[in-house]
Length: 512
Image 1 (spheres, rainbow, N blue to C red):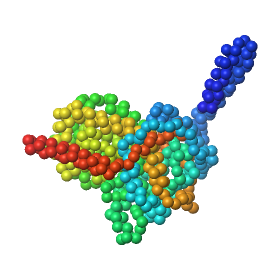
Image 2 (image 1 turned 180 degrees about the vertical axis):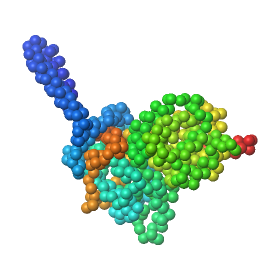
Image 3 (image 1 turned 120 degrees about the vertical axis):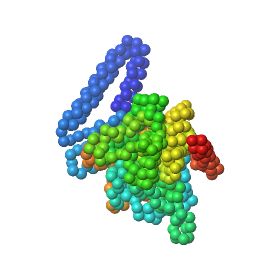
Image 4 (image 1 turned 90 degrees about the vertical axis):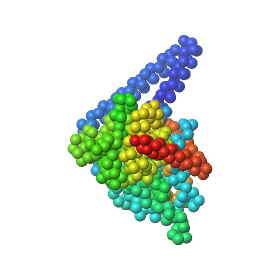
């Protein structure tokens, strides 16, 4: 269709030239015009027939899932394809998928600041590179090995992950390969879908003691300052089927609309949290801060019963409907929590209980600019003071809430998530000191092979997050690594702000 439009534009230019030359060329112009009308009508009829056929297939056993319209961050539409699903028992990958590089428009945008952490997460291998032995040692806890070879994706599975974490993580990487067709380099990686990081940095500080050359490169969803696990966007960006949370592009828009329903000043003047307290002691401790006959800590805390929610169709768990309080609490569970991005996007002041873990984007956020820090060791007093401060400093509180929401809407949109994945994998591939190969037990995967064999919510979310074709623009530009002094200053500034807030809190309680 795009080629046709280009041809039509060229033809119209020629036709205009013919008219200027006078009546002698009128017949030629008429012939061209008639051919153009005939060709356009044929094209429209063809498209109409295709749509009619697709519509009728919804009533039959052969179904074609039409991908939703996707747009890049400049509003330009991606080229669209469809998931071509058939009733054959073993859905195979189409041979029509191109493996050559696509031409992309130049992107002058520099990626958001948090992309700089890519360099830090890969620093452990900067001097030595990554050998095959290192990668193989990462298989100890990995759920799968993923290979990108000449534009195709292969997976070798080792064990089943919690729920469908592995499935939607693999799905997300496949969509990345489609979005930046021909740009994702050949690579091999190991992925662990469990919660907590396991590659202890202390085990690799003394190479002579361990008789090895460096830590195994292991991808997962979060890390901490004591480990070398490589942090990657979590599965929920493409949908969390088990609890009916749609792909991030849809949730992000729902949160944006949800923020408009109640202005900040009209929201409940308390701190809100809803979740599962059974996953860790720190959440059980948080429940002590709930309102009671004995005390009101300015917190309104609710236990999430996912089994009951499932029976009721998840009517009370829509994250976009929870932007009704001036303050919202983020607290980790067994590790980092997926809820982090949903809470930060709410225009409310995020009360962030001192975290141990980090995901790929949180490290660049600053206290008093994007969130308010809460002491893990004294949650109740800290929460009460934070809410009192926010209710008495409404302008500054709203600025904090809006800054976090702006970051989530603009810097963490789905285009930037894909760009982060691209740059992380690209920088990782540069460190490989061996030629990636497809092992005998690996299986080639593609959108049809994964989505068409699934049912219900899983298939729906894959359809919604399906990338129909390559992006028009190249990824944003990866910013330079932190200079050592810049990073030290960054940590020092963050610590100074937290200490300042703790001082305010101490003064508050000394007067009350």
